Length: 479
Image (tube, rainbow, N blue to C red):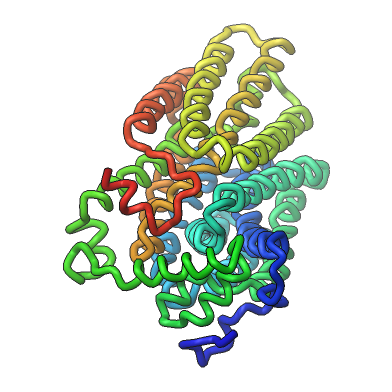
């Protein structure tokens, strides 16, 4: 097999080639391995985002921070991520998808070390910024890579691995909160962050073993290298050739905005199909956090205390249950995504979130607290994260990445994730203040209303994309 258009061997696949065999399962295994390695880079994003759920209890006591400072420290990561999110499309096109993920791991390692050594509020905010840069790169580039490397027949399953690993990171953060809670106050939370500096070293090395995205290679005119990757990640050699031809056509397609650049085509003069795609991506990414899931991920200890739990051990133990259920139901979504389709999962998930938020609000309305009310609160929270994780959690990233046209995919993903992080920041940086204003039950009634409105939006706007090639999405959204 010849490798064309290259000259730069650094982007050639480094794992042993399976192209010489006609064993379909080995190629599917190779695609699974590539997506797994890319998705694992998001473990540290989930870990650092959710670690503050328990760490804030000890940081507040150790450093004497106020409620307002804790609220900003917890939610600031989502705002800081905008810097790298908006730059990620450019970085992914210049450095490649793989190179950007390596860079992200460097920032994550540095941020974790800086958090563990922080001696005051300003130092923690600076460290949070460094961590956020790496998390933003991961959040944009990993789903783009996963969508581009996966064959259409298993793209839903493979792309859902991203959310599995985010939730693994979330679960590990809850376990870390619980495991190190017994250490002295000034030491426990620092150890929680310090252990997060180790995995990025190994993940950065593992990412180097991945092949570059075939679509990025084709955009660079390296069609021989692109075909080499496609043969190894497609179900059949014939499918690899078909995918390559579709990619070539997408790369060579004229821009709808008259050649004025990607951002112009996205925002200034979008075609009708691009306009609808953009509305779906931004709407989905907004709904992903506007339904209030971040209030549970970051502030579940406060919710459980409101329902009657008093000890740190019981509260942190309940958060581990939240992490376990959240991760388990993402696995369910992974199995169903290519069978049931994206649209049914999203509709069922959003409706379930609306019902669970309403139940949680009603439970918190009870004036008297008891063991029964605490148990009911935990059950409602578990139902909420289960409903979220079976659809909205993993499918939003998959759907958003796969419907963007190739020429707009990296920048379009950046725009969608920026909307996601802004919404996440809005929820995470206002929950305590909003609960003081309209009460905690009022917050969850509000989130339930947003989820119900989101369900109507999904029903009216989102077509099914299961088993459609990435290059067919323009045609699908023109209908």
